[in-house]
Length: 445
Figure 1: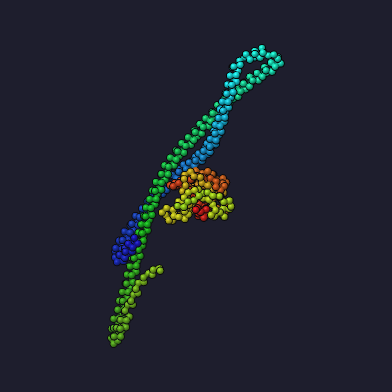
Figure 2: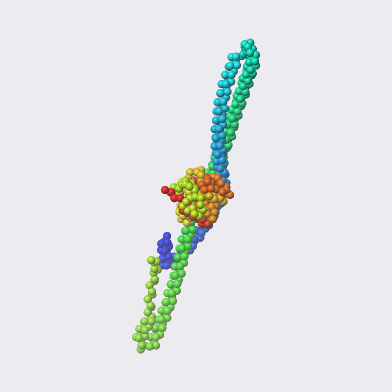
C-alpha cells in the first residue's frame, strides 16, 4: 500500500491539478473514515457496558456456585462420617440380633423344662421328702430359677427395644442426608445452567467485541494510511511551489544578465569579443548539483507431588511444588492469543474440573473472592513482598485472613471469569513485579 502512495505522489508531481483534486478527495475519505471510527467506538462502548453487566451477573453466579460447591464438600464429609456411624450401628444391630437369638434359645429351653415339670414338682418334693431341712433349700433353689427366667425375659425385651431404636435412627439419618443431598444437587444443577447461559452470552459478546475491535483497528489503519497520502500530496505541492519559485528567480536573473550584456556590447564595440567572452562566461549557469539520493542505512507436564519447602520464600527458587497436577497451556512471557502486545504474567495449567489446588508455600490468605478477568481468585501472602495467585477456580476453600500451610488445599480447579478451558491461572509476584513460576517450582522429568 505504501508503494501505491509513493506512485500517487509521483503522479502529483507531474500534474498539480490532479494533486489538488486528489487531495480534496483524500480529505473526504479521511473525514468519512474518522466518522466510522467514532461510530465504531460508540458501538464498542455499548458492547463493553453489556459485557460488564454480564460479567457482574456471572460473578454473582460463580460466587454462589463456589459457596455451593463448598457446602457440597462439607456435606460429603458429613456423609462419610454418617456412613461410618451407620456401619457402627449396623454392627451393633447384628450384635443385638445375635443376643436376641441366644436369649430366645435360652428362654425356649427354660420354658420347655418348666412345661415338662409343671407345678407337680412341688408336690413330689413335699411327698417324697424324707428330710424336712433339705426341702427348704430345694424350694429356695426353685425360686432363684424363676427369678432368673424373669430377668432373661426382661433382658430380651430390652434388646428388642434397642434394636427398634437403632433401626429408627438409621432410617432417620439416611432420609435426612438424602433430602439434603437432593436439594444441593438441584441447586447446583440450576446454578450451573444459569452460569452456562451467561457464559454463552459473554462468549458471544466477546466475539462481537473482538470483531468490532478488529474492524475499528482496520478503520483506524485506513485513516492513518489516508492521512499519509494527504501528507505526501501536501509535501509534493509545497515542493512544487518551491521549485516554481526557484525557476522564476532563475529566469529573472538570466533576463537581467542578458540586458546587462546588451548594454556592455553597445558601450564598447572595440572590446566586443572580449566582453562577449566575458559576458558568456558570466551568463553560463553553473550546473545544478544532482539531487542527492538518500543513503540507505547499512505443553510440559507439572506436578504438585513432593516434599513441601519449609524455609523462607525468598530462598525457595526451584524448590516449590506446583499447585496442581496437569499440563502447561501457557508459559510466562508468551503472547496471549494473537495480540503480541499482551503477554502472560503467569502460567495456565490444564487440570480436571474440581481438582484440588494446593498452596505452594505456607502463608496467609489476603484475597479470596471473584475478580473480573480472573474469576474466583485466591491470593496468598508469603511475607517480604512475595505473593502467589491462583485464578479461574470453581470454588474457594479458604477465606481472607486464613493461615494455610504448604500443600494445604485452598480451592478447586474451574473455568470461572469467562475462561473457555478448565485450567488454573498461577502467578508469583516479587515486590509487585511478575516472576516466572517455572523458576520457583521444581522441574519435571
